[in-house]
Image (tube, rainbow, N blue to C red; front, side):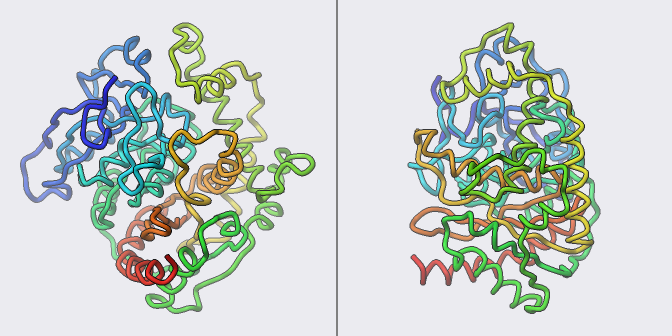
Length: 432
């Protein structure tokens, strides 16, 4: 099947006008696209796979998240390509084509919300909706050099969104402009406008940044200078997150690898990642095993083995996974308190090259999921912020806030953004 639009972002183009013509609405005049995982009345939700599309009927209702932004005054211009069944963070799709990364055309755009990120990064829409289970908004935002927001778990309805793994599924969104990111967030989260609040503490886990191949001058250096300019240096705190999680999340010890398997990783965070991926696999199987075994769909070679592994996996006792979630949320809530921020690398390095051998990505993927699982398992909100380019490839950093602090985090991004971009520009000039 051929790509149907500029940059290969869209799987289907159409116009859904806003439900009101008032110019006073918060999203009036803005255009957006939706990942092909959201139901739109009258259209078949394709879930990234032609066999899924061919065996399902058109939706008879539109997902509440889509309705919210239409009611907020925005115009929908189509549905975007995604990884098959939302089961990958690369953004490559053999059926519909791989959307072109606007920052680095020879690199993957990131997934599974690949088309939604590319549509924003290429300037085709003002914002877009995606879903984030294991990283599917944060990763493509980072790779495409744009803002991407994963909200607190259960903060936005996932009704009318095909489930991947309900314990982690969220409705996220992308934008180039922090003010648009904030306005979209307020509509989706049904939040009033509130004044920005000064962060109480900014925690920088040096061990997490040691997983990244990007020089610290381009990541934490930029963030520290920006925070010092805006809030003073006294709120900056350094922490070893791996040690903290090891001590405060005892249930995660069940998932610690034996021997030297995590020599290239942080063992306690790798354990978080392992617990998340096992529960995610269990829930994916419950959701989709019947369809997969009945239809035997044509799946891309890179995904087929992993999806069938999930379908054939043994039944799990999920109690220990729930304990990890509960303990991590309590531990990070205690660390951050009300207005604390945890800074993280969104991903551990440059976007991988297109069609890169999966074996050579093994360490990168393991490190990426260790970082991504912190918000995934805790249910905290996280935003990926672009930091310009390093060696002609996009760089980003993430901020994480406690569950329910979405408005605080959205406001903080808007306050920080110009200063961060200015500092990133200086750093880019002197380190490239």
